[in-house]
Image (cartoon, rainbow, N blue to C red):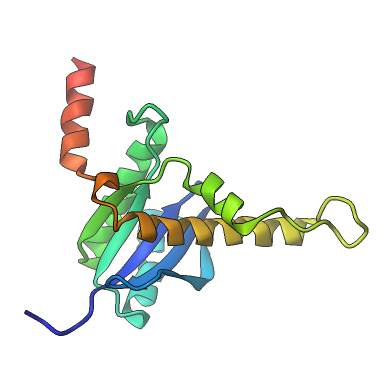
Amino acid sequence: MSDTPRRFLGIDLGERRIGLAIREDASAPRGLPTMMRRATALADSDRLRTIAAEGRVTELVVGLPLNSDGSVGPQATATLRWATEVAHALQLPITFVDERYSSQRAEASLGRAARGSNGGAPGPARREARRAAIDQEAARLILEDALNPELLIDPAVLAVGMRESAT
């Protein structure tokens, strides 16, 4: 057995941004000082390859946004496709975690958003920074949730369920 610690890259895939966090074995997850803008799976893979190499990542943990009833919807299907392409490109194993409500939990964890400098609504830069912080916190929560076996998802089981519901 190797003495090399396992390092996990938690990924919260959004439509426009990707939240990232790293955890080593059972240690507390920590957010990365970055958030990625989404591009294509290939371009995302190139950027993630650099982040994974610098962080000595040994496994990807991707939040799977199932519908509230646990079914697979369009966003979960797109996430499965993207994550499979990225994991293949990076040659890293992948684990999927049920991430229903992770963004809402992240928002609650971060507390209320700060008001703008004039006491009103925050400006565009502050709103964008808040969204990035939520994505990063959601990725941290995904890594935390990966320690709970009840939240791990086997994509093969999902594929069987999707085929059965289509017939």
